[in-house]
Image 1 (spheres, rainbow, N blue to C red):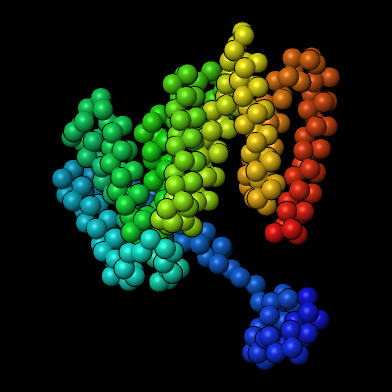
Image 2: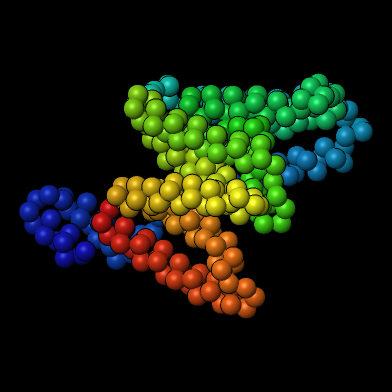
Length: 317
Protein backbone atom coordinates (compact mmCIF):
# COMPACT_ATOMS: atom_id res chain seq x y z
CA UNK A 1 0.00 0.00 0.00
CA UNK A 2 2.74 2.49 0.96
CA UNK A 3 4.80 1.66 -2.14
CA UNK A 4 1.70 2.13 -4.31
CA UNK A 5 1.23 5.62 -2.85
CA UNK A 6 4.81 6.45 -3.82
CA UNK A 7 4.24 5.27 -7.39
CA UNK A 8 1.06 7.33 -7.69
CA UNK A 9 2.92 10.40 -6.43
CA UNK A 10 5.75 9.86 -8.93
CA UNK A 11 3.21 9.66 -11.76
CA UNK A 12 1.64 12.91 -10.66
CA UNK A 13 -1.70 11.31 -9.74
CA UNK A 14 -1.33 12.39 -6.12
CA UNK A 15 -0.02 15.70 -4.87
CA UNK A 16 2.58 15.84 -2.05
CA UNK A 17 -0.07 16.71 0.56
CA UNK A 18 -2.42 13.97 -0.61
CA UNK A 19 0.37 11.41 -0.69
CA UNK A 20 1.48 12.31 2.84
CA UNK A 21 -2.07 11.97 4.11
CA UNK A 22 -2.69 8.59 2.41
CA UNK A 23 0.69 7.33 3.64
CA UNK A 24 -0.26 8.16 7.24
CA UNK A 25 -3.52 6.31 6.79
CA UNK A 26 -1.71 3.28 5.34
CA UNK A 27 0.66 3.24 8.32
CA UNK A 28 -2.35 3.42 10.66
CA UNK A 29 -1.11 6.71 12.07
CA UNK A 30 -4.56 8.17 11.33
CA UNK A 31 -7.59 6.21 12.48
CA UNK A 32 -11.17 7.34 12.00
CA UNK A 33 -13.22 7.50 15.19
CA UNK A 34 -16.41 8.57 13.43
CA UNK A 35 -18.29 5.41 14.41
CA UNK A 36 -17.18 5.74 18.03
CA UNK A 37 -18.32 9.37 18.13
CA UNK A 38 -21.68 8.40 16.64
CA UNK A 39 -22.04 5.68 19.27
CA UNK A 40 -21.26 8.17 22.05
CA UNK A 41 -23.74 10.69 20.66
CA UNK A 42 -26.43 8.01 20.42
CA UNK A 43 -25.69 6.97 23.99
CA UNK A 44 -26.03 10.62 24.99
CA UNK A 45 -29.44 10.80 23.31
CA UNK A 46 -30.60 7.72 25.20
CA UNK A 47 -29.26 9.12 28.49
CA UNK A 48 -31.16 12.39 27.92
CA UNK A 49 -34.35 10.43 27.28
CA UNK A 50 -33.73 8.37 30.40
CA UNK A 51 -33.10 11.51 32.44
CA UNK A 52 -36.28 13.05 31.07
CA UNK A 53 -38.23 10.01 32.19
CA UNK A 54 -36.73 10.13 35.69
CA UNK A 55 -37.43 13.87 35.98
CA UNK A 56 -41.05 13.37 34.98
CA UNK A 57 -41.41 10.50 37.43
CA UNK A 58 -39.98 12.50 40.34
CA UNK A 59 -41.67 15.85 39.61
CA UNK A 60 -44.91 14.71 37.98
CA UNK A 61 -47.25 15.57 40.84
CA UNK A 62 -45.75 19.04 41.27
CA UNK A 63 -45.58 19.93 37.58
CA UNK A 64 -48.80 18.35 36.35
CA UNK A 65 -49.50 16.28 33.20
CA UNK A 66 -50.29 19.21 30.91
CA UNK A 67 -47.10 21.07 31.77
CA UNK A 68 -45.06 17.91 31.31
CA UNK A 69 -46.58 17.32 27.87
CA UNK A 70 -45.94 20.95 26.87
CA UNK A 71 -42.32 20.82 28.04
CA UNK A 72 -41.58 17.59 26.13
CA UNK A 73 -43.21 18.94 22.97
CA UNK A 74 -41.29 22.23 23.27
CA UNK A 75 -37.99 20.38 23.64
CA UNK A 76 -38.83 18.30 20.56
CA UNK A 77 -39.67 21.40 18.50
CA UNK A 78 -36.46 23.14 19.62
CA UNK A 79 -34.33 20.17 18.54
CA UNK A 80 -35.94 20.01 15.09
CA UNK A 81 -35.78 23.81 14.69
CA UNK A 82 -32.05 23.79 15.51
CA UNK A 83 -31.43 21.11 12.90
CA UNK A 84 -33.56 22.97 10.34
CA UNK A 85 -31.51 26.17 10.77
CA UNK A 86 -28.23 24.33 10.13
CA UNK A 87 -29.39 22.05 7.31
CA UNK A 88 -29.16 22.52 3.58
CA UNK A 89 -32.39 22.89 1.54
CA UNK A 90 -34.18 19.69 0.60
CA UNK A 91 -32.83 17.72 -2.34
CA UNK A 92 -33.77 14.37 -3.86
CA UNK A 93 -30.07 13.53 -3.92
CA UNK A 94 -27.79 12.98 -0.94
CA UNK A 95 -27.20 16.12 1.12
CA UNK A 96 -23.95 16.50 3.13
CA UNK A 97 -24.51 16.56 6.87
CA UNK A 98 -23.73 19.95 8.45
CA UNK A 99 -22.15 18.24 11.43
CA UNK A 100 -21.72 14.97 13.28
CA UNK A 101 -24.14 15.98 16.04
CA UNK A 102 -26.96 16.96 13.67
CA UNK A 103 -28.36 13.44 13.21
CA UNK A 104 -28.23 12.82 16.95
CA UNK A 105 -30.11 16.02 17.80
CA UNK A 106 -32.69 15.29 15.11
CA UNK A 107 -33.05 11.76 16.49
CA UNK A 108 -33.51 13.23 19.97
CA UNK A 109 -36.19 15.56 18.63
CA UNK A 110 -38.27 12.84 17.01
CA UNK A 111 -37.84 10.52 20.01
CA UNK A 112 -39.06 13.31 22.28
CA UNK A 113 -42.06 13.75 19.99
CA UNK A 114 -42.81 10.04 20.32
CA UNK A 115 -42.45 10.40 24.09
CA UNK A 116 -44.90 13.32 23.98
CA UNK A 117 -47.50 11.21 22.16
CA UNK A 118 -47.00 8.30 24.56
CA UNK A 119 -47.37 10.63 27.56
CA UNK A 120 -50.56 12.19 26.18
CA UNK A 121 -52.04 8.75 25.59
CA UNK A 122 -51.00 7.54 29.04
CA UNK A 123 -52.54 10.52 30.81
CA UNK A 124 -55.54 11.41 28.67
CA UNK A 125 -56.30 8.15 26.75
CA UNK A 126 -56.95 10.07 23.54
CA UNK A 127 -57.23 6.97 21.34
CA UNK A 128 -58.24 4.42 23.96
CA UNK A 129 -58.02 0.86 22.55
CA UNK A 130 -56.53 2.26 19.36
CA UNK A 131 -53.42 3.57 21.13
CA UNK A 132 -51.17 1.76 18.65
CA UNK A 133 -52.17 4.28 15.98
CA UNK A 134 -49.87 6.75 17.72
CA UNK A 135 -47.10 4.69 16.14
CA UNK A 136 -48.54 5.52 12.71
CA UNK A 137 -48.25 9.22 13.57
CA UNK A 138 -44.66 8.69 14.77
CA UNK A 139 -43.91 6.83 11.53
CA UNK A 140 -45.26 9.67 9.37
CA UNK A 141 -43.39 12.37 11.30
CA UNK A 142 -40.08 10.53 11.43
CA UNK A 143 -40.29 9.49 7.78
CA UNK A 144 -40.87 13.11 6.75
CA UNK A 145 -37.97 14.25 8.95
CA UNK A 146 -35.67 11.56 7.54
CA UNK A 147 -36.31 12.67 3.96
CA UNK A 148 -36.24 16.38 4.72
CA UNK A 149 -32.98 16.27 6.68
CA UNK A 150 -31.39 13.28 4.91
CA UNK A 151 -30.98 11.17 8.04
CA UNK A 152 -30.47 7.41 7.91
CA UNK A 153 -30.83 6.91 11.70
CA UNK A 154 -34.20 8.68 11.67
CA UNK A 155 -35.29 6.62 8.65
CA UNK A 156 -34.43 3.46 10.60
CA UNK A 157 -36.57 4.72 13.47
CA UNK A 158 -39.46 5.44 11.09
CA UNK A 159 -39.36 1.93 9.60
CA UNK A 160 -39.12 0.36 13.05
CA UNK A 161 -42.13 2.39 14.20
CA UNK A 162 -44.08 1.27 11.14
CA UNK A 163 -43.29 -2.38 11.83
CA UNK A 164 -44.30 -1.94 15.47
CA UNK A 165 -47.55 -0.29 14.37
CA UNK A 166 -48.29 -3.32 12.22
CA UNK A 167 -47.80 -5.52 15.29
CA UNK A 168 -44.40 -6.94 14.40
CA UNK A 169 -42.42 -7.78 17.52
CA UNK A 170 -38.67 -7.20 17.18
CA UNK A 171 -38.20 -10.42 19.19
CA UNK A 172 -40.19 -12.47 16.69
CA UNK A 173 -37.66 -15.27 16.33
CA UNK A 174 -37.00 -15.53 20.07
CA UNK A 175 -40.72 -15.68 20.73
CA UNK A 176 -40.93 -18.52 18.20
CA UNK A 177 -38.48 -20.57 20.26
CA UNK A 178 -40.19 -19.99 23.58
CA UNK A 179 -43.79 -19.68 22.41
CA UNK A 180 -45.68 -19.70 19.11
CA UNK A 181 -46.35 -16.16 17.84
CA UNK A 182 -49.67 -15.12 16.38
CA UNK A 183 -50.05 -15.88 12.66
CA UNK A 184 -50.96 -12.23 12.09
CA UNK A 185 -47.59 -11.17 13.51
CA UNK A 186 -45.80 -13.57 11.19
CA UNK A 187 -47.64 -12.41 8.09
CA UNK A 188 -47.25 -8.76 9.08
CA UNK A 189 -43.52 -9.31 9.34
CA UNK A 190 -43.40 -10.83 5.86
CA UNK A 191 -45.62 -8.08 4.43
CA UNK A 192 -43.55 -5.29 6.02
CA UNK A 193 -40.35 -6.88 4.73
CA UNK A 194 -41.73 -7.12 1.20
CA UNK A 195 -42.98 -3.51 1.39
CA UNK A 196 -39.57 -2.22 2.50
CA UNK A 197 -37.82 -4.14 -0.27
CA UNK A 198 -40.24 -2.64 -2.78
CA UNK A 199 -39.54 0.83 -1.37
CA UNK A 200 -35.78 0.17 -1.72
CA UNK A 201 -36.27 -0.69 -5.40
CA UNK A 202 -38.50 2.33 -6.02
CA UNK A 203 -36.17 4.85 -4.35
CA UNK A 204 -33.28 3.72 -6.55
CA UNK A 205 -35.46 3.53 -9.64
CA UNK A 206 -36.82 7.07 -9.35
CA UNK A 207 -33.58 8.36 -7.77
CA UNK A 208 -35.35 9.82 -4.76
CA UNK A 209 -32.88 9.53 -1.86
CA UNK A 210 -31.35 6.50 -3.57
CA UNK A 211 -28.64 6.31 -0.88
CA UNK A 212 -31.39 5.25 1.58
CA UNK A 213 -31.66 1.94 -0.27
CA UNK A 214 -29.46 -0.06 2.17
CA UNK A 215 -31.63 1.01 5.13
CA UNK A 216 -34.85 -0.03 3.36
CA UNK A 217 -33.46 -3.29 1.99
CA UNK A 218 -31.55 -4.54 5.04
CA UNK A 219 -34.47 -4.01 7.41
CA UNK A 220 -36.81 -5.46 4.80
CA UNK A 221 -34.71 -8.60 4.51
CA UNK A 222 -34.54 -8.90 8.29
CA UNK A 223 -38.35 -8.80 8.62
CA UNK A 224 -38.96 -11.05 5.62
CA UNK A 225 -36.50 -13.71 6.74
CA UNK A 226 -37.68 -13.38 10.35
CA UNK A 227 -41.27 -14.09 9.32
CA UNK A 228 -40.31 -17.09 7.19
CA UNK A 229 -38.02 -18.41 9.91
CA UNK A 230 -40.76 -18.14 12.53
CA UNK A 231 -42.95 -20.26 10.27
CA UNK A 232 -40.22 -22.84 9.75
CA UNK A 233 -39.49 -23.17 13.47
CA UNK A 234 -42.78 -22.30 15.16
CA UNK A 235 -45.46 -24.12 13.15
CA UNK A 236 -46.64 -27.68 13.69
CA UNK A 237 -48.11 -30.53 11.70
CA UNK A 238 -47.97 -30.32 7.92
CA UNK A 239 -47.29 -26.61 7.78
CA UNK A 240 -43.62 -26.45 8.72
CA UNK A 241 -42.19 -28.27 5.65
CA UNK A 242 -43.80 -25.65 3.40
CA UNK A 243 -42.31 -22.86 5.51
CA UNK A 244 -38.91 -24.62 5.38
CA UNK A 245 -39.12 -24.78 1.59
CA UNK A 246 -40.11 -21.11 1.32
CA UNK A 247 -37.26 -20.10 3.62
CA UNK A 248 -34.78 -22.16 1.60
CA UNK A 249 -35.88 -20.62 -1.70
CA UNK A 250 -35.98 -17.01 -0.48
CA UNK A 251 -32.83 -17.40 1.62
CA UNK A 252 -30.98 -18.98 -1.29
CA UNK A 253 -31.99 -16.12 -3.59
CA UNK A 254 -30.78 -13.57 -1.04
CA UNK A 255 -27.47 -15.41 -0.60
CA UNK A 256 -26.93 -15.45 -4.37
CA UNK A 257 -27.88 -11.78 -4.74
CA UNK A 258 -25.60 -10.82 -1.85
CA UNK A 259 -22.67 -12.70 -3.35
CA UNK A 260 -23.14 -11.30 -6.86
CA UNK A 261 -23.66 -7.78 -5.56
CA UNK A 262 -20.77 -8.01 -3.04
CA UNK A 263 -23.24 -7.20 -0.25
CA UNK A 264 -21.90 -8.80 2.89
CA UNK A 265 -24.94 -8.05 5.05
CA UNK A 266 -27.35 -9.59 2.54
CA UNK A 267 -25.18 -12.68 2.24
CA UNK A 268 -24.82 -13.05 6.02
CA UNK A 269 -28.53 -12.60 6.70
CA UNK A 270 -29.42 -15.21 4.10
CA UNK A 271 -26.89 -17.74 5.35
CA UNK A 272 -27.85 -17.33 9.01
CA UNK A 273 -31.60 -17.55 8.29
CA UNK A 274 -31.23 -20.70 6.17
CA UNK A 275 -28.97 -22.27 8.80
CA UNK A 276 -31.40 -21.53 11.63
CA UNK A 277 -34.18 -23.00 9.52
CA UNK A 278 -32.21 -26.23 9.02
CA UNK A 279 -31.84 -26.61 12.79
CA UNK A 280 -35.39 -27.95 12.90
CA UNK A 281 -34.48 -30.53 10.29
CA UNK A 282 -31.45 -31.48 12.37
CA UNK A 283 -33.51 -31.87 15.53
CA UNK A 284 -36.09 -33.90 13.61
CA UNK A 285 -33.36 -36.21 12.30
CA UNK A 286 -31.23 -36.43 15.45
CA UNK A 287 -32.24 -36.67 19.07
CA UNK A 288 -30.60 -35.89 22.41
CA UNK A 289 -26.82 -35.51 22.56
CA UNK A 290 -26.44 -36.33 18.86
CA UNK A 291 -28.46 -33.28 17.86
CA UNK A 292 -26.47 -30.99 20.17
CA UNK A 293 -23.19 -32.31 18.78
CA UNK A 294 -24.33 -31.72 15.20
CA UNK A 295 -25.47 -28.19 16.07
CA UNK A 296 -22.12 -27.41 17.74
CA UNK A 297 -20.11 -28.63 14.75
CA UNK A 298 -22.28 -26.93 12.15
CA UNK A 299 -22.26 -23.66 14.13
CA UNK A 300 -18.47 -23.59 14.05
CA UNK A 301 -18.56 -24.32 10.32
CA UNK A 302 -21.07 -21.48 9.85
CA UNK A 303 -18.82 -18.98 11.64
CA UNK A 304 -15.82 -20.06 9.54
CA UNK A 305 -17.90 -19.72 6.36
CA UNK A 306 -19.07 -16.22 7.23
CA UNK A 307 -15.57 -15.04 8.12
CA UNK A 308 -14.11 -16.43 4.89
CA UNK A 309 -16.95 -15.02 2.78
CA UNK A 310 -16.65 -11.61 4.43
CA UNK A 311 -12.94 -11.53 3.67
CA UNK A 312 -13.48 -12.58 0.06
CA UNK A 313 -16.26 -10.07 -0.55
CA UNK A 314 -14.18 -7.23 0.91
CA UNK A 315 -11.26 -8.14 -1.36
CA UNK A 316 -13.45 -8.18 -4.45
CA UNK A 317 -15.45 -5.03 -3.58
